[in-house]
Length: 330
Image (cartoon, helix red, strand yellow):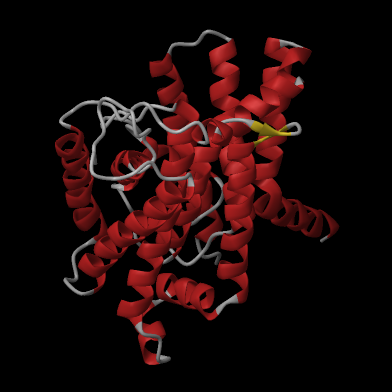
């Protein structure tokens, strides 16, 4: 009986904190392989900076997955939002201005455009899922191609360059903390409050857990779904703003496969691919796990293709564990 209780306690602990144990184990392994320099401040800053963009995206994706949906258009939406918003942040003297009739604007303009434009694109996805009753993967697959094509059309296939100096501050640091990481943590705080302390968050869980029961209890399914996808779009807009600030030159073909990284961070962090379950702290850990793997393999000079294989394997393992946790016990 005692052994059974002990095994049950261990199982419960791993079910709750298993991803944290995985992160610590990965850090230990990477440190043993790459040396103590892996724990250096500059390396940790690199992990946070690189992970901030798909971490912000993963926050939005998490709300969608919890609601029982999926978003395959996130990377394309980031590219389109980055192209459009950074166009409002070009120098007045830029030779390749996308909108030459605009005066030179402050950094507030591209930020505002990124948030509004991302939210509208997300709401469009939500409307297709809620109003037209399209499967989420069908609706967002269509948006994936539309957004990617629009980014090319708007820029004529050329990068948006010669941005105002304020943009460079986005890729900088405040003290020892990279600005992209600071923005990520602000988004984490907002997402955590929304998911755990608002009716919107409760409705999101309810729709993903049992949409029929959610409808019976009086939840406005259509309105909530559109809001969920719109919120995700706002997160993509923030990610687009940070992306432009980091690279200072936005190519319309940018953010390739970023949607996969965002989905990976969410699922690795414990968000159920079946819907109805997920946590914001799990997204943080999932983002750090991906960042640790990528940084460690990069330091080991492992080919990028093998890095993708490793990431895919981890996603499969994470999904298997999620299914095992949710499998009813006899």
